[in-house]
Amino acid sequence: MPDTCRSSFDAQYPLSLSVNLGFWLPDETLFSWCSRYHRLSANGDPRATRRQLFGELRAAGAHDLPSGIDKLVERTQGILGSAEDIVLQRTLLPYYLPFRRRDQADEAILRMRSPNISSLKFQLGLLTSGLGASHPLKYCPACVCEDERSHSVAYWHLVHQLPTVFVCPVHGISLSGVQPPRGRSGPIGWTLPGDHNTDAPNDGEGIEFRNVDSGTSRLHRLAGMSASLIHADPAHFAEASKLGNVLRERLLAQVPRGRRRGINWRKTLTGAKNHFNQTRAAEEFDCLRSLTTESGIRRILAGRSLSHPVRYMTLIEWLFRDWQSFVEAYDQAIMPPSFRQQETRLVRSPCHDSRRREAVESIRAGAMSITAVARRLSVGYYTVAGWVADEDMIPQRRPKSLEPSLRSTLVHMLNEGSEKARIVKELNVSISTVNRVLRTEPGLTAQWRKVQLWKRREDSRAKWQAALGQLPGASVCLIRKLASAEYAWLYRHDRKWLQASIENRENKPVKMNHAAVRMHHLDQSLAHAVEQIALTLAEEKKAPCVRWEDLIRELPTLKTRKIDSRRFPLTVRVLERLLIPRQNP
Image (cartoon, rainbow, N blue to C red; front, side, top):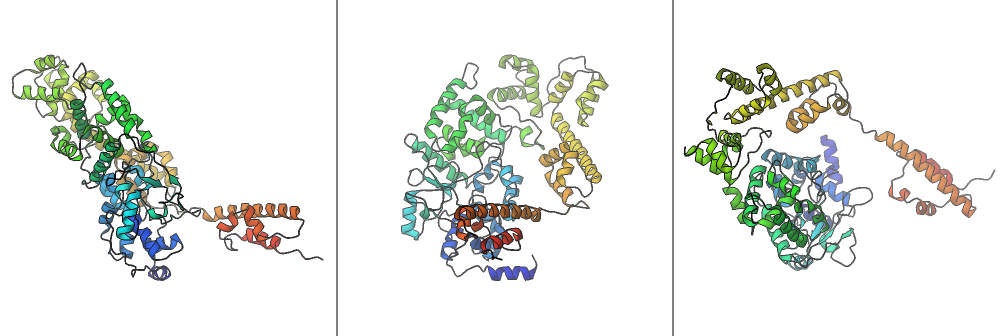
C-alpha cells in the first residue's frame, strides 16, 4: 500500500490506544481481547473494529485460527506482545502443533502472522480428518459470573475453546456453546460470553451440548490433559511410529493379551465402546466411532502417519491415568537407530515389539544363531535377518546359489537407486531375491529409497518445468491438467520449490476475479426482479406508482445492498422510473 493511502486509511480508522486494553486477562483468547476492544471503543460496525485492529485484511480476526497477527502487533505498537507469543498463547494453534513436524509448525505460525492463513486447516489435517474443521465458541456459566465479579466483564477462556474440552476444568460443569455470529455481508461480529449467558442468546445460534451425567470425571480428566497439551513444545509428539508404539505398549499392559501374546481385540473393543459411550458429551464425539472399531485403533497404533489430536487425546485419556504419565512414557521410549536416522518419509517404520528386542539382544550377544532365534520366536528367518540389519549388524548369510560377484553387482545397482524390474531383467534373478538382499543388507534400504526419492524429484521438476514452457502465460489450473501427476507429487514432497517455480516464471497471467462481470449480471437480475415485483404490486393496488417500503418488504436485498448508480446502474434506472409517478400527457 502506498504511504499516502496508508496514512489516509489510518486517519479514517484510527486505533484508540487510549482505551485501557494493553493487558491480557487470565487465559484470554485473541478474539476475546478484540471483542472487549470493540465494546469499549463504542464502534457500532464490527467492520470498523476489524479495520482498526487489522487494517484492510478482511480475513483477519477469526475466533480460532486468525490471520494478520503481524499487522495487529504493528497497529497496537506491540503492547500485546510479539506476534509469535500471541499465536502460541492466545489462539487454538498450540493444540495442534505438538502432533505436527517442526517444519509444519513453523509454516503454520508464519501463515497466521501473514495476511491470510490460506490452506492452513487443510495442512493441519482438519478438513480431511472426518472430525470437522469448525470450533464453536464455548463458555462456562460459572466462569461468566466469576469473571463479571472479578474483572467486570465476561470473556472467552482459551482452555474452553479446545476441541476436547466439554466441561470446565475449574468447576467441572458442562460448557455451553454458540456459533460465532456473522452478518449477511460476511464480516465476523465481535461478541462476549455475557451476550449469550441468558435463556435466549441474542447474537448467535445456540448449540446445546448434551448433559454430562455419567463419565463426568473422565471428561474432567480429558479437559485437564487438553489444558496441559497446549503448553507442550511444537513437534514434541511428532513421531507417529513412536507415538503408536507407546499407545500399543500401554494397551497391552492394560488389556489382557490374546492367545498369541498380542492384542486381545475382543476385550479391547468392548472396553473402548464402554469408555467412549460414557465420555461422549457433545455431538462432535459421534465422529469418534472409528476408535471403537479394530481398523480405527489399528490405524492409530500402526504409526504410519499422524492423525487428528482429538483421536490421540481420547486414547491417551483412556489408557493413561494422567498427562504426566503419558509424557514420561513417550520421552522414555527408545526408537531403533534406523528410525531416528531416517532421512525421508518414505522409509517404512520398523515393527517394535518384545520379540524384536529379544532377537536382537540374543544375536548381538552371540548366544544363538538367526535360525535358532527365528525357530524359538516362531517367525521367519529373513524377518529376524531384517531386524538385525536394521540395527546396522551384518547377519550371517545362508549358503545360496547367489554368487558373491552377482550379489555385489546387485547391491551396487540398489545403491545407485536402480528400479527392481530393471535389476530382475538384467541380472536374471527373482524379485524375491532382490527384496531379500535389499532388506538384509545394513543401510541398503534407506540408501535405495533416498536415491529413488532424489530421482523422482528431479524427474518431476524437469517435467513440470517443461509444462511451464509449453504454456507460457497460462494459469496454474491449466498447466496442472498437462502435468497433473508431477504437480501432485511436488505439492506433497517439494512444495517450496513448486511455489517458487510458479512465482518466478515469466509471462505470468494477470490475476482477475471477473468482479465487473459478476456485478453486471447481479445488476441485471436485481433490476429484473424489482421490475417484476413493482408491476405485481401496481396491479394489486391499482396505483401508478410503488412505495419504497413495499419494495423492500417483498425484496429485502434492496435494503442490505448499497444501491447506487455506479454499482447498480440498471437497478437505479428501474427504481427511478417506477417510484416516480407517471406524468399524464
